[in-house]
Length: 343
Ligand SMILES: Cc1cc2nc3c(=O)[nH]c(=O)nc-3n(C[C@H](O)[C@H](O)[C@H](O)COP(=O)(O)OP(=O)(O)OC[C@H]3O[C@@H](n4cnc5c(N)ncnc54)[C@H](O)[C@@H]3O)c2cc1C
Image (cartoon, rainbow, N blue to C red; front, side, top):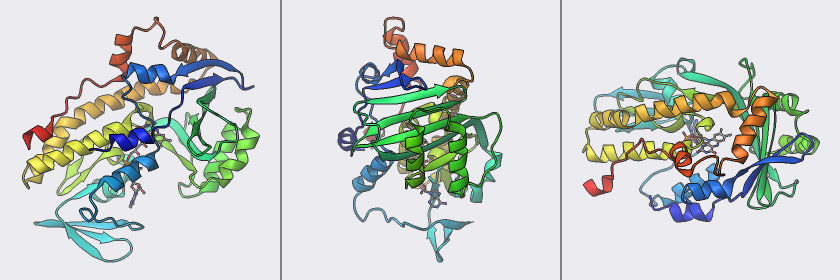
């Protein structure tokens, strides 16, 4: 997509994720430099907003029209197109609608069914925000885990840091998805005894303008397309953040759909069917892998926390052969057609 250079430029390089106890002392680590090396340096960590702005800027001006601050209220299909009624008023007709509107997709709700029909809750909640680097982190991130709860903090450019809370839960919490106060209270109640620096972070959480709180869920669907509408990325699959590389796969899915549409020469039914055929079984596999990881992601007991952190600390030692790691970390199962050759 000719955007790699910009991605590398905005790469957030953190050398190590240190595992710290509740008193702040380091007892384990994940060597992120060794991780990058194992992946032949083809690993980049980038803010979602940076990625969005790189893609936005890469699109030839005037070739795509952006409409911000609006949403789709209704989708009406007829024989030669699909009409979209906007929330802010007015409507327009298009050939196709591609819903890329995340986990809680409205396009999915309008065309397929309610979210509950497809949501697979992973028994986790995740919260995050960015703030000033008040912990003076330089090149290392920190992670503090106690049974059922994990905090991750890592430095980001501009002398700031990202704070992430992951809460394991044996029940679905009842809260209003549009009420930030309620969500902040869940985080504060759950984490106030976990983290030595909590009192400093508490205030920052209230002030943050990018506070995020949501379930960790997957979307399970038997088809991603219907009529003249297709879903991509989190809207149709969302293996969840537990899959570890979803932004990458999200772009791969869209890449496949885009090229299949190009190749089908206007017959979108062929393109939609190829898109599902080429990508769906692979994503189902990734979802299953994420479900397996969910069991140990934030362990329920001190023993499993110790074991998880011991393995992470020695992941790049001779205990774990490089070949085994490569197989675990990369996705050799998906062979992507070099569409440009077919052009
Ligand atoms: C805390 C957290 C950490 C993560 N960490 C990683 C990671 O380390 N690596 C990784 O690869 N992935 C990670 N992910 C997953 C990754 O962020 C998502 O998979 C990816 O952003 C999905 O892209 P998307 O386009 O489907 O949705 P989004 O990126 O969420 O974009 C959806 C867009 O649709 C817009 N939208 C939504 N609803 C409407 C509507 N009704 N009308 C109009 N517009 C709408 C939104 O404003 C947004 O711009 C993480 C996710 C979370 C929550």
